[in-house]
Image (cartoon, rainbow, N blue to C red; front, side):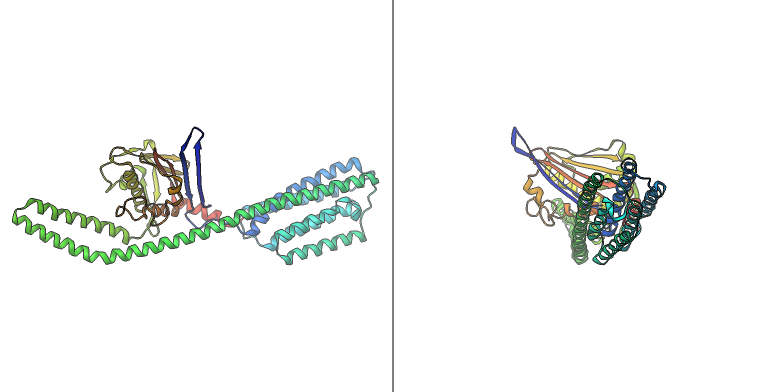
Length: 454
């Protein structure tokens, strides 16, 4: 599946100072499925051949009224049917998603040259105005296959036309009909070449964009792996001093309890609680960032949201509106996804302030779960959205955040084939929509089957 980033800004005609900005990231759970160049070419060649076969059939029918002599109609119809049968076989073969090579494409085009030669042999040979269709095959070969195969098709076309000069069945037509035929042949050849080359070029351009997206995805996953390694190292290094602080705080609490000062005892207890919280966070960091390595488990949507709210602040209040989606089950790396959702919920609480609730909604759409996290904060401008999600970029006050929450959350959803959409209106708030497949394993299997080039 492709990586898509959209950033659009719209301003109302009567209210120019309000802008609506959308930003979206979509990635696949596995390396993107990118067809091979030869597979793209073969797919489009099959479509062209259907048009070519239809044109041949129409030409045979029209020729019955224009040619003043009997033609071997049965042989002509047989050759058109051979072309149609060969293309049906090609379509069935391509649907099995084999590994397509250049020589496959060249072989298909060689069959077309042979069929064209046989048709021309039965209808006047080199005097047939449609002999110019050899140039269509040569022009397409220049784009579709390597130079060696292109030259081979040039040689084959040259040899076949030469054979027609030596022998062919005569065709008696008037000079006017021959001239009109040349004109029609020129139009047909030009239309085939322009249409096919334009479409193939567009398809190959899409493939290049997918390759670029794959390279970007690899770079992002590499950076994420580096962050996970740093987090695990930091967790390991900080575990010992935090344990020492917890031990000292416990002894201090016991000593102060004997001294009879409840305020100091409460402070010592608070230190222990905060150290415990830090250790819990470090345990999560030691487990790595993202969903890599975590086994899949089946949980209900309500349980997933409940786990995401574990440790969330009481204020502002988080309101759940799951309806029927709450009882649905979903198979995914629950710990990583709940942590990612927790990060989004925490950001929404920070943006909303104590006076506005944060709303979480859920819905099942086809085989995808969509969860919205909605706040009523100040919203974000286009300038902020252009950078939001970058590692170590944050809009919070110094000391309130490192700018990694959204980045890591996005990586988690990307890693399981999900999507992340931020819809923000300055002055009204922000809606973050995440979508995840109901069964990551099944989605991955489908991606694996469709990943073979067509």
